[in-house]
Length: 223
Ligand code: OGA
Ligand code: MN
Image (tube, rainbow, N blue to C red; front, side, top):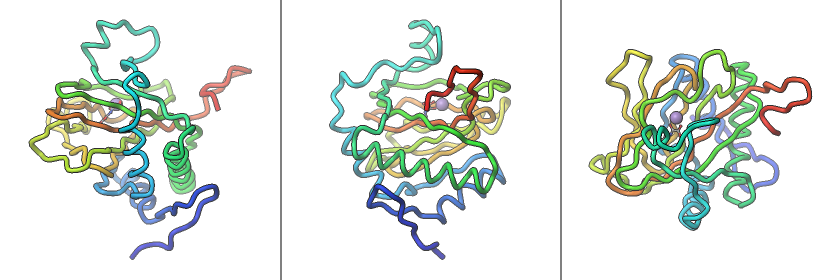
């Protein structure tokens, strides 16, 4: 049974509490949640449109962290990214929605999630992101990873799956097809994962919920 949709301020969208409840249950039981066709159309369609309209020059070659070197990057990942700052209507709606998800998960799971950062990613045919973790144990930085896919009509033969491995020694993994509206959510320190090359352009949003790790007057992450 569907929960009554709640209206949230500053937007004409609704929040599906039953989806948030399912994600919370999955995280509790297995540390990850894969939800096909889950991102509400009111959020997904404007994001899809917005990202189609982004000029190529808005995208930059993705890095893999502070002080990384280009050649190493190119070995690890070859996609291009564009950070979402909430300037567009589509971006604002997305950030409202992820904020509602954060509130729900904090209430249910006491995760202490504080801020959220996310970017569009464009993988051209043949692009990849090799097996990696989004966060390293002990750094208590990125806690929860959230990936949303924006590819209508994606077929199995198009490739480009996200492969989510259960742990360090898992070599098989779970394959996630990057079809429009699918969400993949997982604990950033626990699940190595990779993006396989596709034979068509592949669009996604990758985001991370972070703890408040501010020390003294250095605010990290920035609000
Ligand atoms: C990432 C990532 C997965 C995807 O950007 O860190 O793992 O399927 N993305 O786009
Ligand atoms: Mn990742």
